[in-house]
Amino acid sequence: MNYSKPEFKEKYDNFINGKFVAPLGGQYFENTSPVDNSLIAKYPRSQKEDIELALDAANAAKDSWGHTPAATRAALLNKVADIIEAHLEAFALIETCDNGKPIRETLNADIPLAVDHWRYFAACIRSEEGSATELDQHTLSMNIKEPLGVVGQIIPWNFPLLMLSWKLPPALVTGNCVVLKPAEQTPSSATFLMEKIADVFPPGVVNIIHGFGPEAGKPLASSARVDKVAFTGETTTGQLIMQYASKNLNPVTMELGGKSPNIFFNSVMDADDAFLDKAIEGAVLFAFNQGEVCTCPSRILVQEDIYDAFMARVVERTNAIIQADPYDVNTMVGAQASNDQYEKIQSYFDIGKEEGAKILTGGEANILDGNLAKGFYIKPTLFEGHNKMRIFQEEIFGPVACVAKFKDEAEAIEIANDTLYGLGAGVWTRDAHQLYQIPRAIKAGRVWVNCYHAYPAHAPFGGYKKSGFGRENHVMMLNYYRQTKNMLISYDKNKLGFF
Amino acid sequence: MDRIAITETATKVLNTLKAKHGALIFHQSGGCCDGSAPMLLEKDDMYIDESDILLGTLQGVNFYMNQDQFEYWKHTHLTVDVTEGRGASFSLEIPLGLRFLIHSRLLTEEENAVLNKKNN
Image (cartoon, rainbow over all chains, first blue to last red):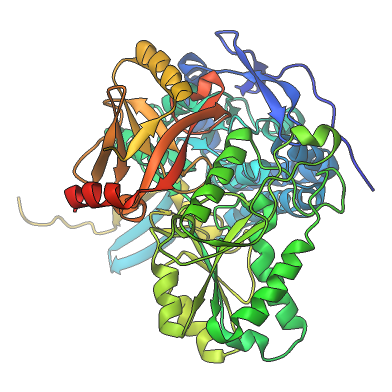
């Protein structure tokens, strides 16, 4: 079954205090689809005054929402999950249109996973509790978790609704009010969600503001009226947001990407079986979501004695990728999200070639037929080279992987860790010792072992080194949105005796 | 002999933004999404110290990169260009519907001898 571009209104507004509100300055920007570079709709070009309005609403709502029973908050999250699920196909189409990713991915990954994250956090809050300790016969230490207050969240464009669903539910379920800015490249699914859930939360609890980073993102990230900022993006903006937070002595969490190694030990080729087939797919996952994933397995490291045989299979599988109309359910790889990304990836092809890397396949744009010729398609690309090359060190954020050989375990670990980043990694082996020892030696927050690109709500995700800090998903995320109130209670009737 | 240059089109955009915002800097970003691209910021917005390497000055605008990133980049020559695009970062050209980007080439042997001697 094939789909086509969904219908949109001419323009949309911010969602503030439970209502859609036009930007005070009356300015809008045009959002286009990377599928064919056609206009989607106009979205608010918000300024500081719009952010202030949203912060007014969030601050006014925080006391009441913070005291709302956990059972009620959880029930509302479940309601959101049900609503997204009931409109799964509509959300999937919007996401494909806005981001360029193939419809089979949005139908089967982005939207169902988003639904599950709302349900997961609804369940978490009901099953965890604070703690109390009797420190001595008369003294009780009681830890009560309290919401922070108002949270600012800035999310990326690679998984628009999913990234929203990573960030909003844990903040809301712990009793915080949120002002969230979607990426300006992909404002549509957040807006559609607000249309569908406008009445679910009390006014002011969720506020969505659209606009450009320097005009709307910066005033949100630097406001003294937020109690925390959560950001997913790149390092310079991450550093800026930390500076602003330092002025307000606010906590922040940062997810800033990586250059993830995907390591294949020789035992993967001990048999030509289902596991080898899985491992080959595991290498080709670099092209998943057009490579626009913070944990894109963009460095493929293969043990030298299987290198030729294994890479022949990987190249063959890469060449079998169907890159076509993202609305076609057979399409595996769609369009890059914007023209600047498209241009940037091609500039990496230039420097890769200059540095002497060999192109095993791809290495150029893919000009598709008809209207799609105006879209931003890049052929899945494999470069062969060494780890000191810039294409091995920088996040290209395209369907591009760089391949290198290693001799033994020590060299695999050395190459894997020779990077500024430490977000994800993959280890593939049939060796029981390597299954544990190699992941432990890799400096990254998530190591997939004999799998890759799984993102369950129940497993913590976050970076080492310059990939950031703090974790997303998992019950532990609740504490990134809470204070601990310690009540130290004396049940002793007698004085200390000091004075 | 310079590590960094700027195209004519990018120069025009840079000068427009200088006229609007005053003193500016470039800072090369790393990491995901809109990363691996130069960010144009108001001069005093970002805390710059000895961990940031000054690669050169374009139209009076200093271009910085973090030291550890520079270690992987120092054998290449960079040219700042501009293209249509969007970005979720705080870079000042974004509201114009434009994004700065970097084109790179290897330094020539002669350039490498001079530039990387000076910096090591």
